[in-house]
Structure formats: structure tokens, C-alpha cells
Length: 118
Image (cartoon, rainbow, N blue to C red; front, side, top):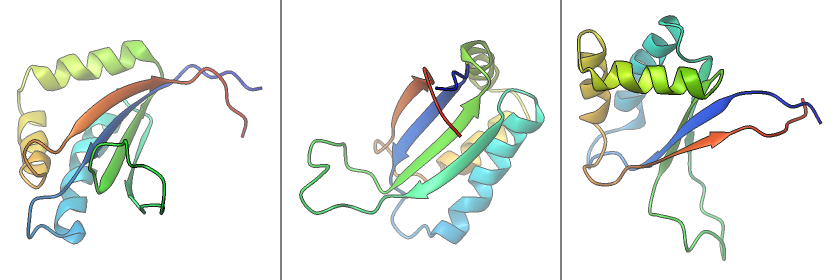
């Protein structure tokens, strides 16, 4: 097994009523790309949930799963502090993205890779 040191910050959420994926995606890309360009993150992705019959009943209600991958926990923490400072340009990028997400629908969690292959 290939052990890699990386952390993945995940968000589960729904878009606001009337907001399309086409409207949301550029705001997510602008925010997450900025974090990559700043050197905090390595990559990101956005996935749409496809419910499976008979599974997932204990999960929170969500339509989308966004992930941003960090080299490790130190980079994740540095990024969190950067966003928390709420200074430009990250303030505007973060607010533009969040303005399209349904209030109260987001759940977040952090995962650390303990083994991988490929």
C-alpha cells in the first residue's frame, strides 16, 4: 500500500433554489483555484450526488460533494487561517461561492489519507 500524507477537506451541500450548476461552478472554481494558486491546496473537485436505492438514509441531505486536497494537515490549517482572516481577495471569492449555497445545508469534514494505491 502506498502511504501518502495528504488531507482532504470535504463539503456536503445543496444549492439555493433557482441556482444552476452552470452558475455555481465558476464561483467554486475561482475560490478553489485561488487556494491552489496560493500554494495551500493541490487539487479540487465537485461531484453531484447520485442517490442509491436502499443506501444513504443516515447521511445528511445533500446534492453536492466538494473536495479540496491538501498536501497535509499543516497546509489545511494554514488555508483555514487564511480564509478565516476574511481579507481580499479570498473574502470576495468565498462569499461569491457561498452566496449560491443554500443556507444551513452545508456539512464539512476533514479526512487524512492513511493508505492508497494508484
